[in-house]
Image (cartoon, chains in turn yellow, cyan):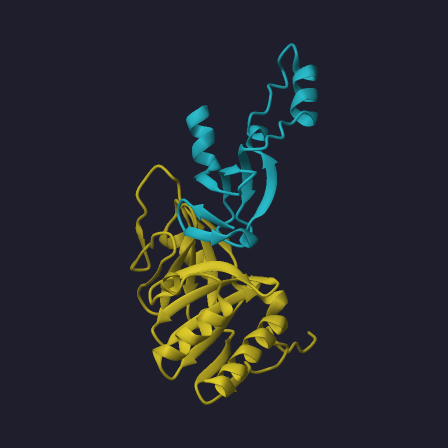
Length: 187
Length: 92
């Protein structure tokens, strides 16, 4: 068989990393995604140890698994470092009554770490057209950023993930890098 | 213009796309005896009030829900926003 070389969303062999004074921006190609829809007429069960979050929220579970709310009765389930596995099948096995669809290659995660919580707050003020409290730690939402639509997941006070469509990875990286470099200069 | 999303709170209108009159949810019965005339009205006739208007907005860059937004077309004041699925179930 032809030798195939896997590449990341940004087209390289290894994920791209940008380190600046106040920020670290990292392409994370290891996250597996599966969307989960549950029937409206019963309470949401726990999945992988995650209590499925309310609208606008994010929750962590066992072994690097987490979830954020995407629409009514619908969540995105994430598995850190599980992109190479059949994550949707694992989710379906965990919750047979759920409607599951594989999403891993549809999205790319860009992790942003700030040296201090204020660095993330300053970044959010530039990139998200929402009140700051909408993205307090433990919150997640989808909104528009430049000409794109992306999920913003605030995993901790110094860690924000921006999850965009894989086809827009280059534009999304460029937009984030531009703002981060500007904030490093302007403070 | 800010739209008060019932689940997500105030959201900028730029996140939404506009469809039109919320009466589009009241699709006539295609098997009814006057279906042709009813569909003619449904497709071509719209009220265009200067004042309070119920309209459908799609939260395209958000949770992808359809909302019924009651808006004053003169002042742009938004009087209410409900999930269209809830409105449809209530009217059913």
